Image (cartoon, rainbow, N blue to C red; front, top):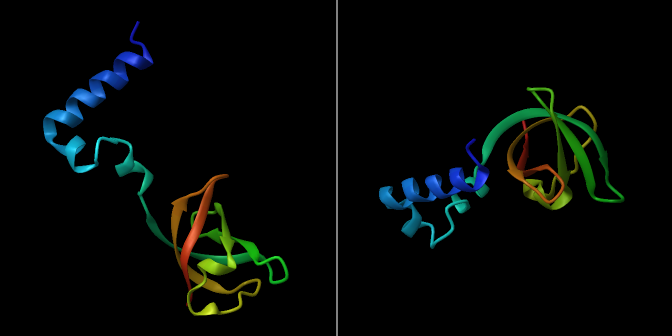
Length: 101
């Protein structure tokens, strides 16, 4: 049976041999942490008083958005069409670089 530890060791060997390990300052998972996707969607809910809300992407998944992620300080309203990038957050995916379309 192949263990998780064995797979991780094998993965690190492959990364080191390709020279990627050194480029990432010894953290092979840093590459995956910075993965960002550009998306389009609509504002599902936004609470201006609490400065957060959710965007439903064209793929049907909800993404958390904070007011600081909205470019130009524009206020979001329910139903606004937006473009945004998705990045991993503490509690799930979050939007950044949100622009009204």
